[in-house]
Image 1 (tube, rainbow, N blue to C red):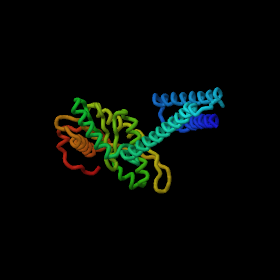
Image 2: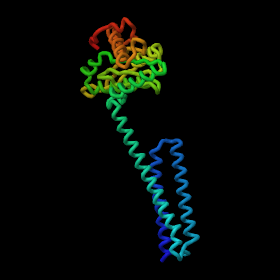
Image 3: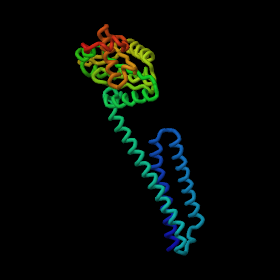
Image 4: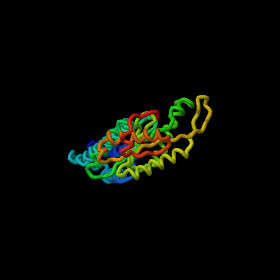
Length: 287
């Protein structure tokens, strides 16, 4: 009786370890390649060693238990396997919850159409960047760009074509930026780019590169009849940088917006830097 109970405890523990390999492999598949995944590979190796140890115990001590005290080791084997399985299951659930939270956070800060950051994230990030730049005396610049005559695209080809145009523009802009820079949808067809650790001169070069890239590209769209057409667009861009007179998030954006207004007034498809004369401009006019 005792040896049968001992054998059952060890066999159940063995099966629990084998079953634990399934959620462990699932969790490893959720992790990116790197140190953390490698550490869980070590855990898998340890579980395989445990399985080998359980098998060794069964072979060496099968049927030899005759006293209740000899159930201590099989009991440790059983509860040890249950502990390992519970640990792996909790880790898997934690990893799944963290991934779900990341997805929810990404959806909360991402514009669903263009897949760039939304206005909510822009306001928070720009405020943080202004504070950091002031604290460490770093440069900070902002670009505000707007599609020229975007209303004509919607009126001529339909709003779906307009959506494709916006998404394509964002893809082009993202390809022109560093990983540390941020593009966000400010509203409608207006977008703001945060150029971290970048003076106005460098940001102006980035803006001009974006302007030229957009001007040189064509966009394939479908009109209201379903026919495929190719269109070209241009953008106007205003550039502003953190300075003595432009020393806050709102001032930075307003300065870039006024520079953008001047770009529109001067004929569109151009880059204008916020200077003292530009900052004196009032009104927004027809974009």
